[in-house]
Image (cartoon, rainbow, N blue to C red; front, side):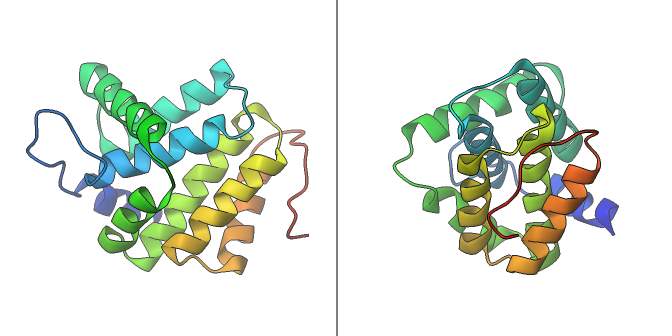
Length: 159
């Protein structure tokens, strides 16, 4: 099933623009992933590498295309006034299973440094609410991501 979700995400239109916009689902996803990575105010190398790895695997990009997508997400997040511009794109373009899988990707970035920060937890909660992912699915995705990180620290406010 996860492969089906990844396949769906890969097939999303990239938009024909020279400079990708926040209305491009790939840029919206990149911006949200970038946002959660920076939610705690500290961007560690391990988080940045996981961010790029997720983009590469999810969208089958590498090299300059990967750098462009990461930069577009960073730029879009830095220019945004809220998360709605990105979450509305994902809610429109992803089915329920793909939205759940996206929340799982956000948790993977949160736990890339082995810790759960309250601001990261809140960010994932807000994004999940905005894209229509149920509380139980968000918590299950968090548990799965935390279980894959040896010695992960931090508790979600849901528990």
